Image 1: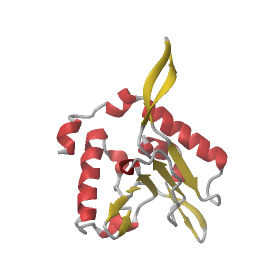
Image 2: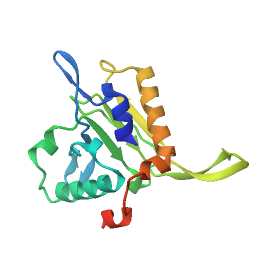
Image 3: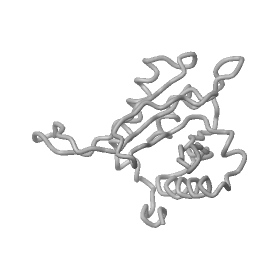
Image 4: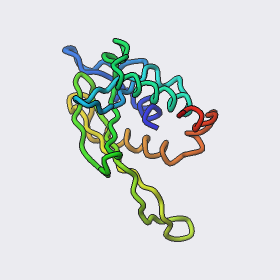
Length: 173
């Protein structure tokens, strides 16, 4: 869902340079990984070329290699955006800090059960809170709202997320 939003909103798949905003062609989201002695956010390189199953497998591999200190130089230097999740610590929402020269970071927490309006009345749903922190030199609040709206629409379209995907359980093992 994040890659879809980055593809549609190129200003977020960018870095800030001394000359200003530089949009990057490849979508390389950094995936925040907690280590015993800190945090690293290696890039999932060319994420726009991966379907959901390939993404799940690639993220699992990236996390394992980050924890065993076997990341490639490009994975440590070419992130264009960062995704951070603290759901495993029972955090439901938080604000993440942008890592320069990137222009934005999205923070997600643990999904929680909430009552929402359904077609035939209230239904219980799993609701994820996502916050977006941005460098205001590159993007503004309207840009951010549009990006989050695209992310939300992609998250809510499970059929599109799974289209062309194989076996997710197999990819995660």
